[in-house]
Image (cartoon, rainbow, N blue to C red; front, side, top):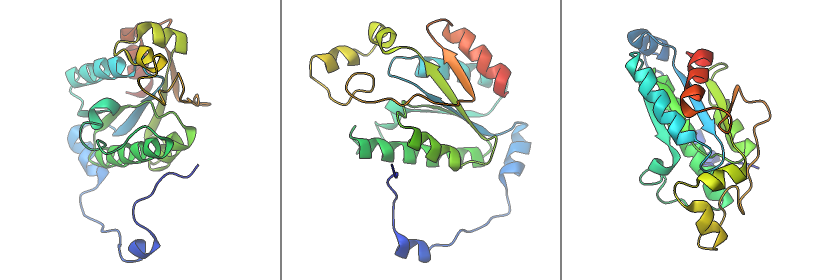
Length: 202
């Protein structure tokens, strides 16, 4: 699967990368931290946004400089023109990954909470970063558990036929094969999951 790309060969020939004097390392030094992207992937209602929110609160309280990119929130602005067909999901991931890369370059710890159902999309995101900058965190819960939680009513609506292509119902989800960290939200509380992330990556 090839992710959608903006522009084309002609455009690439006319655009050159411009180097500047202030580097990511300089921005990290100002913030006294190592910039990285913590990419939380999982089914709807697996706990991604809850964990991301608690994680950012924890890191901010410790004096870290962070930003949280939440999939639903981004669809109110940056990605409001995208639907939920496969090509739209690919473009959704591409845009979020590019924004996350810019924020890491700014010296931030970027937390992404995004279903990102396809391995190709997550691999695309990973390949934008230097080794060690991208941490794939699998927020793992079974479809049955997620459907039982269903805080937004998405699973119920999908089963009534009101929405289509919902990941976990009639939309596929490709589980991460080798994530940097797996969080079992059926066995661990959100708070315990945050402790694991902090211990592993900060």
